[in-house]
Length: 330
Image (cartoon, rainbow, N blue to C red; front, side):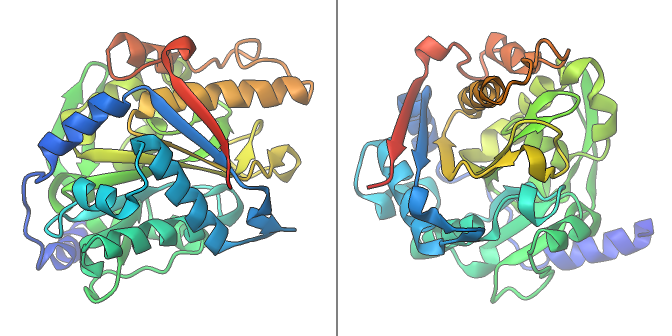
C-alpha cells in the first residue's frame, strides 16, 4: 500500500475518535499492585468436543479466571472499573499463524461481550494485529469504518506514527492504533514455542505493533523484547493480559505445526505480563520434557529476555514469588 493510501485510510479509521488520556489509571495502578504477581491458569476439559470449541465454556472460563485474579465474584464491576465508556479499547490478538495457532475468535468474542456489558460502545472496541491478511486468515472480519460494530484492522490499514520510539536497544515506529487511537489495550497472545526466541507470549506479542520486528530477533530477542515492553506507551495502556492456551505448541513455532500442538484447554490471565510469560515458559519446558524434547536452553534459545524484564523491574520472574493458581473450571 502506497504512503498516501496509508494516510488516507488512517484518517478514515481515526475519524470520530476522541483521543483521551487513560481515565482509569489510578484504579489500574492500585489493582496492578494488588495482583502484580498473580497468574491464573484455568482449564476446562469440556471446552471442546473433538476440534470444536464451546463458546459458552470459554466465556465461563474467562469469568472464573477474572474472579480469581481480582478475588471477587463481581465480574461486571471489575470490567467497569478497568474501562470507562469513553475508552477506546484495543484487543491485541496474535494472528500470524492462521486459525489453529492464533488467538481464537471465540475467546475474543467473549472479551468483547464483557466490554459491551461494561458500557463500552461497539465502535470503541478494536481488534488489531500486524496485517489485515493475518486477521482474515485467523477468522476475523475486517471492519474499517462501521462504528456500529466492533472495528477490526491491521497496521497496514492504520499506518504507523511518524515518531521514532526509542528505548535501550530498540528504535521503532509504532502503529497509530496503539499511539493515537486506543486509550487502553487488552493483550491476547497465544501460548507457543518460538524457533528463535524460545517462546512467544505477552511481551513478544507487541512485536506486532512495530514496523521493524525483523531487526529484534538477534540473540534470542534479548534484550529487545524487554526493551520494547518497557516503552511507556505499551506499559501505560496495557491493562490486562489474557493468554489463549486453548491450543498450545511446544515446538516448531511460531508457524502452526500440528505434530507439536496440543489441546491444553486453558487460559492464562494476569495483570503482570512478565509473570505470565515466566509461567508460560515453565509450561512449555514441562511439555517438552514430557514429550522427550530437549530444554530450550539445550537448543540454544532459552528466552532470557524474560529474565531481563525481571531485572528491569517490569514484572516478576521468580517462580517462588509468583502466585500461580491452577484452577479446573467448576
